[in-house]
Length: 193
Image (spheres, rainbow, N blue to C red):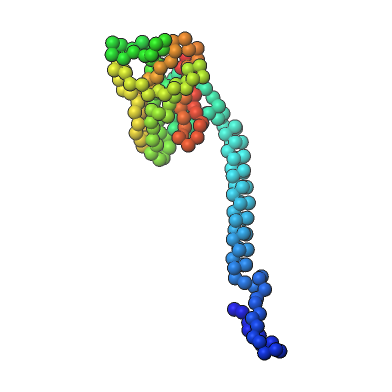
C-alpha cells in the first residue's frame, strides 16, 4: 500500500513503493525465469535425445526410411510393419479397363501392428510412383478381390489386401510408397519393378 505523508505546506502526499517492491514486478520476474528455464531444459532435452536416438539407431540398423525395399521384404517403422507380398499387372476385363497406354498395377500388401496401441490404416496412405509420377493406389476393379480399405489394428493384429493403381506400360521404375503419417511427408518405399 501507498504511504501517506503530510508535507510542511499542509498538503497530503502519497509516497509510492519503488517498482522492485511491487508484487507485479516479482510475478513478472518469476514468469521470465520459468520461461527461460523451460526453454533451456527443453532445448537440451531435444538435442540430447535426438543425438542419442541417432547414435543408437546408427549402431543398431539403418533408418527404415532411407532404405528401398523389394517385394517380399518387411519394412518396420515405429512398430508398424508393411510388406508387399506380390505384384501383378493386368489389362483389365470386359467391365474395367485402364486408361489408354496404361495397365493396372495390383500390389498385395500386409500391414501388421507391433505396437501396444491401436493403429489406423488406410488405402490412401499408399501411392504408386511410376517414373517419378505419384498417383493414388485406390482404383476399384471388378476383377480384383480383397481390396485394402481402412480400419484399425489392435496389438499384433494384421490385415492383408490388394491395392490397385494405373501406370504406363512403358514405366521403367515402379514404387509403392507408404506415407507413415498424415502430418509429415516421410515415406517407406518398395520397388515393384
